Length: 178
Image (tube, rainbow, N blue to C red):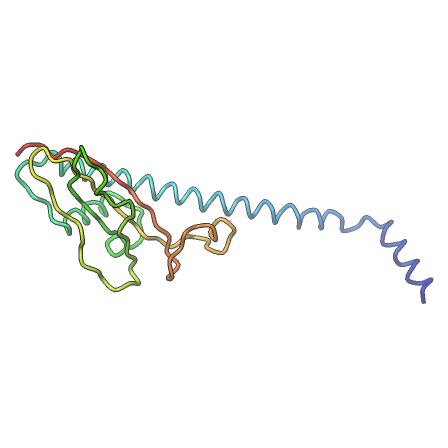
């Protein structure tokens, strides 16, 4: 019996059939993990770029529109129309607009007010369009579901209880005189 086991082990060491399969399995797994992380990162960058562009476009419209005070719903709708690739943007986007004192930035909150579609609707906390020559800050927080939340990269994202990650974009502007 022991002789048979020794012969089997010796023959197993000499044989080279299937060695390419083992290499393929090892390399393919590593390659797939890197590919999945690259796809996830690219979609996060694409979402962030589109959100930042749409917030900048809407901020520009607010800054240059004289005499018209925008509402929360209209600004949110305009941002979602500009950012064309966002999933369920109206339900997952939360906006803040506050007036800043240029000589005292200590009153500014550094945490974004975020909400996802799975949560109950919350009232708008800070959305006050400014007066002439006011320094304003608009912050948009978009909650989204990661494409591959079970990958190593997806697990590193800061997810809430419902599995949503967040993107935050901030834009500052001076309200033009009306």
